[in-house]
Length: 163
Image (cartoon, rainbow, N blue to C red; front, side):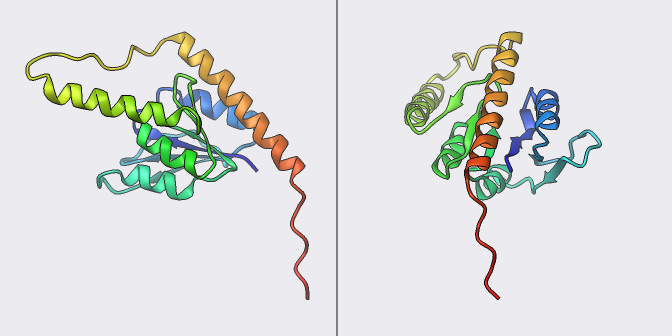
């Protein structure tokens, strides 16, 4: 069964994820460093991790697999999850794939170097989140869950254990 893992601390599309997941009856886990309010639903749970560096990322990466959708804007977390076969989506609907993650990691490194060398200068971050991003995300999440459900139906169940 497909599941959704959310890097929850700064995710602007949690409400949308909850609605789509309910429609597909896909369990959702919101992972954060502090308590976040979540809907009262048996399909939705929150995991609060320590405030240690990358604790939420580590939990998500350790629990991601080929049967899940990971929602994050963290490129290094996306890379870790893509490596284990998860479908990874940014909140703006952009999919991180085996073909695109290398370029995304390289761009992130270049931008970090530019920011480090720009003493006293402002180097812009990502563009503001817009309604078209939300719409693109909803479409991408819907498509990802449909794909995972189809794969689950096509995979034969394991044989029963021998007595």
